[in-house]
Image (cartoon, rainbow, N blue to C red):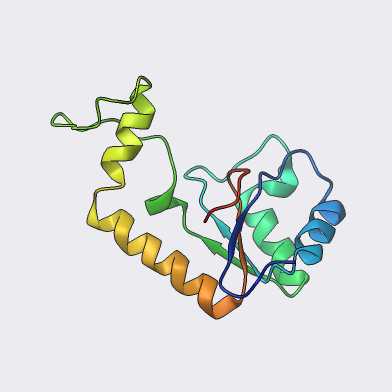
Length: 128
């Protein structure tokens, strides 16, 4: 069970809608923060509008935060993040240095504190 203010992460995988809800409820999640820049899936129950509707019907929150937190990014022409072999990783590291990312991260952290617990709908490892 998640503790208050804790941010958990999960990939939706190919769960059926009800199985996903059971997973979320079982972890004590009150809000899904969707950090996908393109919140679409080959599994239609995880497209933005469907997922938002499912969460609302289940009495859970849904916050689409992907525009400023998620996504594939191109490195800037002056990137200092040369340690990353993968161009998209360099681009994301560059993006993490922007005010937009910082502001969106502040929103995510505030949501986590006020919602109790929060689940990030994109990746699959706990965030410390």
